[in-house]
Each structure stands twice: as C-alpha cells, then as structure tokens.
Amino acid sequence: MSPLPLFTVLILDLGDVLLHWSPDTKTRVPRLLLRDMLSSGTWMDYERGRLSQGDCYARLAVDFSLDVGDIALAFEQARHSLHVNADLGSLIQELKSSDDTLRVYVMSNISIPDYDFVRRMPFEWSIFDGFFPSGLVGERKPDKGIYEYLVEKTGIDPSSAVFVDDKTDNVSTARSLGMYGVVFDSAAKVEATLRELFSGPLQRASRFMRANAGKLDSVTDNGHVCKENFAQLMILEVLDDESLTVLTESPSGSTWNFFQGKPLFTDVFPDDMDTTSLAYTVLKHDHHLIMRVMDEMLQWTDDRGILLTYFDNTRRRTDPFVNVNVLTLFFRHGRGNQLARSLDWVIDVLVHRSYMDGSRYYTSPDAYLYFMSRLLASPFDPALHGRAMPIFVERVQERIDAPGDPTELAMRVIVCCRLGIDNAVDLQKLLAMQLRDGGWGVGWLYKYGSSGIKLGNRGLTTALAITAIELASMQKTTRL
Image 1 (cartoon, rainbow, N blue to C red):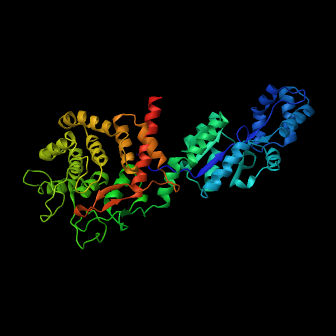
Image 2 (cartoon, rainbow, N blue to C red; image 1 turned 45 degrees about the horizontal axis):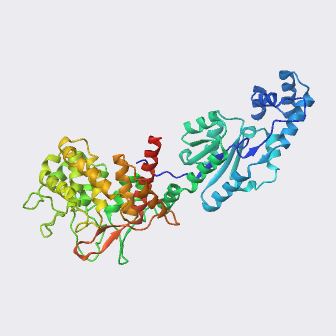
Image 3 (cartoon, rainbow, N blue to C red; image 1 turned 90 degrees about the vertical axis):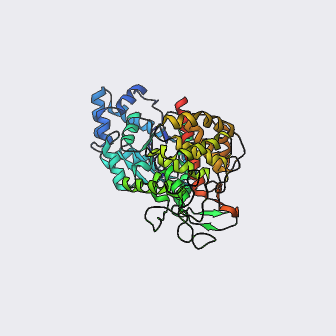
C-alpha cells in the first residue's frame, strides 16, 4: 500500500463554489454577454490587478460595443446577487471544529474591489486561515503561479491538500502539483466527498495512527504493555510508513527477537523464525545477509524436516503459522523448494482446517489465511500455487460472515480483496466497529505460549482496517 493518506488542508474557490450569483440583471447587458465578459482577456487582466475597475469597464464597453454605464450597472447588480452557500459554509465549520489541525484557504480569481465587497458580506470569514485572491497575488488560475504562491506562503505539503473548484482546468493544475482535486459539479456530491475525505473512516483512522505514531505498543489481555517487533513490522508492511513504528534489532545483528528489550514474564527470550522472516520480508536488507540468514534457518528443523520456531535447541517447537511466514521469505527469494516438508505440512493444515483453533502462538484461523495470502502473493511458483490456491480459495470463502474481532475481520476482508472475492458483509461489520478516536479496538492476534495470555495491538488492527477499507474501495471502483 501507499503511505498513509492524511488530508489537513482544504483550498476552496469562491465563485460558484462557496458563493453563488446570478448573471440575470435588469440592464441592457444580456446574461450570456455578461458571462462572455467574465472570460475575456480584459476581465482576466482586471482579476490579476493590472487594470482598475474603471479602466476595465471602459475597455469592455469598447470590446463589446456597449455603454460603459450599462456595464457598470450590470456588474453592480450581479455583485449584489451574491449569496453564501450556507450548507458548504456549515460543513467547513463542522470540519474545523472536529479537527483543530485542519487549515482552510480561499484561492479565487477575483479583483481587489470585488474581493473587498465579498469580505463585507455577512459570513463567519474567520473560519478561513488565509485568502489568496488573484488581484493581490498578480496571478490567476489555472496558471501554476498562484498555486505555487499559496504553497510557498503557507508551507503546506500539496499532497495533504484537497482543492475544490468548479473549473476542470483549475482542478487539473492542482492535481499536477500533487493536490487531491475535486470538481464542484453538484453541491450534495461535493459535500459528501469532503465529509468522507476529512471525517470519513479512513481519515479518522489516519489521524489516530498519526496521533499515536511511535507509541503503538501491544498489550496483553491481563493488562501488561508489551513492546514487540512483530506488530510493528506488520504495520510497516501494510502502511509503508516508517514514521509510525519503532523497531529494535536483535544484538545478534542477523536474527530478530519478538520482544524489544526485556521480554515479558522472563529474563531471556530467544530470537525466533517468525519475527526474523517478517523482518527480512518487510525491510530492505543486503541480499547476501538474507541468504546467510536463510542458510542458518535451514539448520533448525525437527526430525521430520519441519522448521522450528526458535533459534534455540532448548525450545524445539514447531508451529504451522510460523512455518507459513518462513516459507514466504524463502519463496520470495526463489528458495521455496528447500522447505518441502514445511510446505507439505502447511498445506495439510489448510486442507484439514487444522488452523481453526489457532496454534500454540496464534489465536485466530483468519491469521493463518492472512499469512497464507502473503505466501501466495510470492512470485508465481507452479508447485505452490497449483497445490494451494484452489483449496485456499475454498477456505477463505468459508470464513465470510463468521464471527470475529476487528483484527480478524480486517484480515478477512484483505484476503478476499486479494482474491477478487466480494466480502461486503465483513467490511460493514468492520466499519461499525470503528471507535470514537478513529482507531479500532484490540484484536487478540497471538498467545504467549503455554500461558495462554493473549496479545494484541490497536495500531495493527487499525492499520489492517485501513488497508481493508482501501482495498475494498479499489475493488468496488474496478467493478464499476
């Protein structure tokens, strides 16, 4: 996925967006001719501040063979027909009150006299953080100059901005600078779009993740905070944003430990295959180092040739969930054939649904299917896909609409999207579980061995939910 989107800036046009007006005047100037004047080179110079109002009207009188008094009166009546789009104004106030980081600017092609008139209209203009009328800037839309002027003066990141204008050319320029462009073609449609972009589930979730960046620790079901690497790596994988996570490499410099620093409930905990495989799948490392670590992994198998969970002879335990993640690392580097026994095992677990009650270290069948989807996303391997994919699709379809916590639902929706399977029912359940702070509650992903203590991470649940919603949205758009 792309880095987490977060819109913190709204840029609005005035005419035919925030303000409405009528070209129907009680003068000798027809409405169509009045609109023609507004698109003329003379009027554009006026909007850039290059002509006074009097000089503009005089030139228009010559250009359109009209009396200058009629032109002045027509524009005066049009000016007095202006009224504020009250619904949009109320929405801006609502968005600002719900997010104190939101900045809202006006950028409009408007002359200084008209701008001064507008600012005297009855409206709470203080909700705006800045105004950029073309008459003051000396540039007008769709020329890039006025956009670049706003970006320079405000210091905004264009990718964090939503730009709304009724002219497609103006929106196109905004998009060329990296802004999210919205063409104002229907008031109801645009207001719904802005509400979704600034206060919809994805935006609220993005704010939650940003507000808690670097503090997205796991917790146990008996109240302990747990600083660990695995959830951090999963968050990084799905959102591709290093600023959200904190990682601690093992002192060994090659293998990874589940825990960061001192482990829970014990003084020493060995490095494990699961976290190590995820780290070398998600993070960029030297190819030779990855090959060396994989060579070491092959030395840690049980009597059946199945990979162990730990780099530790005193804990000779195997786990199918862990083996799926190690297989993912090996298949992504073209070495899956070296783990034939492990592959046989994880496929047998899939066929016989042996994952339904979790495992020693994992609580959920949806985690097994999610990890399998990562494995099957590896470069195409006929042996792997031919054996696993048909039964995998069946098992995924069986899970649709099953009970689940938000982590399970998010994983389930993601897997369905990867397979092109519609799963609107679990998506709706997931959306309904979003909390007031924008995040989702803890889902218990794994267990602390034989103790049965469960661990979960709100940051991971929310990251998975964001990914699920985005993938489902893209899937819906593709179908349309």
